[in-house]
Amino acid sequence: MLSVYCRRLYLLALVGLATTACSPTYWLELKPARPAGLFNNGRAQAQAVADNVEVRLRFVHYEPTRVVFEAEYHNSTNHPVVVDPTAFKYEVSRAPAPVAAPRTKRPKPLPDTQVTAAVAAASMSLPLPPLPPRSLAAYDPEPEITALREGSDKAAAKAARVDWLGLALGAVSMATDIASIGKRETVAQYQSRAAIQNVAVTYNVISSATKMEQAVAADLMQQRAAQLQEYALRKVTLAPGYEVRGYVYFPRYDAADSVVVQAPVGSRTVPLKFVQVRTRQ
Image 1 (cartoon, one colour):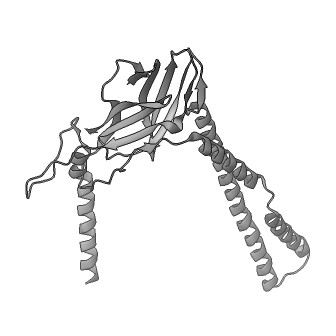
Image 2: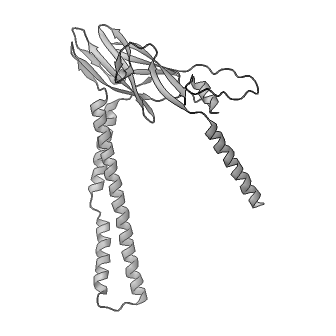
Image 3: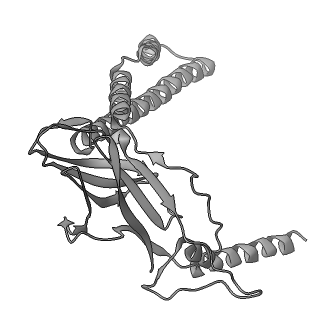
């Protein structure tokens, strides 16, 4: 009876693996809906001009939970312009799902075919997650930079902190070893001394590993803070004739087909439209 049950589980696992293996995969990318004919690092840019301020926007890459754009401002006015990343807005939408005929198989797009989010989800037998009902603001890099620096300092301090308990356990272990020199120990005494040594060694190994993890975490947070400080678009007053560029971060929505970034220009915003493309691999 047990072997039959195990065989059924095995067959179900094989069916699951086969279904997953047969599901198509897609390459995801964001492109300007109307490219301006301008390129930056090989990527097309969207462009808008308002009140003699030129705004350019290009898709950079995806992060696990974010999508990254690079914004570029050129101030051709005769007065300063404030550029604030928190004033960016982000709107997503998608095409409606096609109505499938009853008892039809799921669609299987051909390789190199571009499909909508609904078609991609149907081809992989996945539900479509909901989209936000309203526009979203871009991430403010300043609190993140501050939090990363503080977290890095705390982790570095923990990594450099003296582990007094570990030192005490090591001292006790060494003292018991020295006390046992030249003496005939009983089995109980030997086992007690060995137990103290094992505790001291085990604790210090774990403590050293923890300190190493804290040091690595401190370094990673410091690197991330430095990266944001160097590349993120930060609030700045742009003098006449000057330009500025930097990364703007938004929440990532793979199930969207259309993306509209509302870029701030003074007291108004200008829309920069992108399409999210899925290409069957």
